[in-house]
Image 1 (cartoon, rainbow, N blue to C red):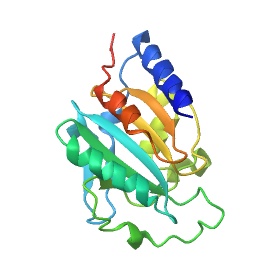
Image 2 (cartoon, rainbow, N blue to C red):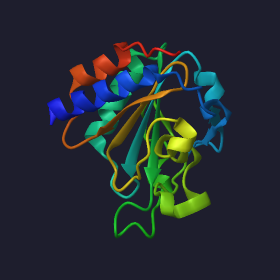
Image 3 (cartoon, helix red, strand yellow):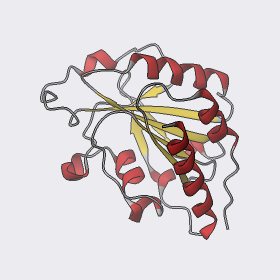
Length: 184
């Protein structure tokens, strides 16, 4: 599994040098779950952004702890955004959104929303961006379950997509944070 994730990272990193224009990531704003406030992604220019998709009914506590540690350690060059989605499990019809309020992490938690493309306009705008090649100019896939991690460069380019099964290797996350994405 570790090798597969590294291959995915390398393929995405290598294809970035194709020279496509940065897309509209920085026009997006993410509504937060606990305060009614939002994070405007233009404030993330110059930092890597790590978007984590979690099942809203079953918060992935080990992943959240790992993301909290990363956000604290790299707060000057990383913004972690956790998006709890309510359409990835068969029992997800009623989600208590308050379970995500005040989760205590140093990362940002968005309001609970839809994650799948079939949700149309109900799909979280940031998830629409990371899953639609027309938006991110790089990757086209749908959210089928929690556990996806999307890495976005300092210049707003999607350059790595990880599907978590078990714990994410700290060394792999370190490589993502240390990587230099070439824009042409």
